Image (cartoon, rainbow, N blue to C red; front, side, top):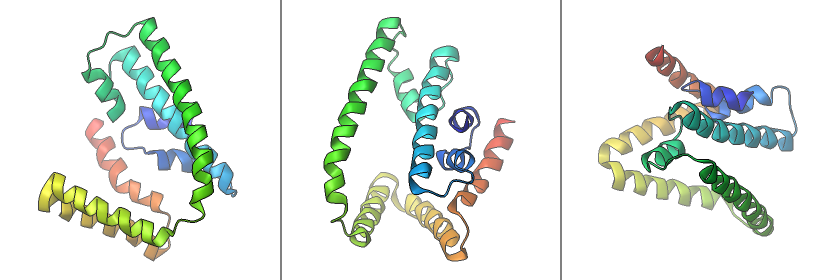
Length: 166
């Protein structure tokens, strides 16, 4: 149901859906399962909305709609086959990667990701993008420093988006 809410309402993210689905859950595995379920439901429903009414609700659906491929039973069968193949491939890759995760220094990894994002944002958007990135970083870090959940940061997006679509 929370994945349905993400695909239906603008401004509701997978994080919000996970909080709704995992309300009261304390185990890490249950939270990850709720996040994965919400993302899967959101992805499937975004494509279902695209097929049913032609509305785009995600970047992947927008990319598919821009290809101007006629939706037919054969096309949907190919999509289902690709989804099954990618699921098997993901399981195989995750089992192989699980052996290496414990050896990763996450402090260094996080720094490398941060520097890569900074470089990429500068290349793609210039100085203006870096200003927006800096503001977003401050908002995200303020939640950590204030001891509140980061999902509360979504409130600054949900209300303006809902007002725009209302």
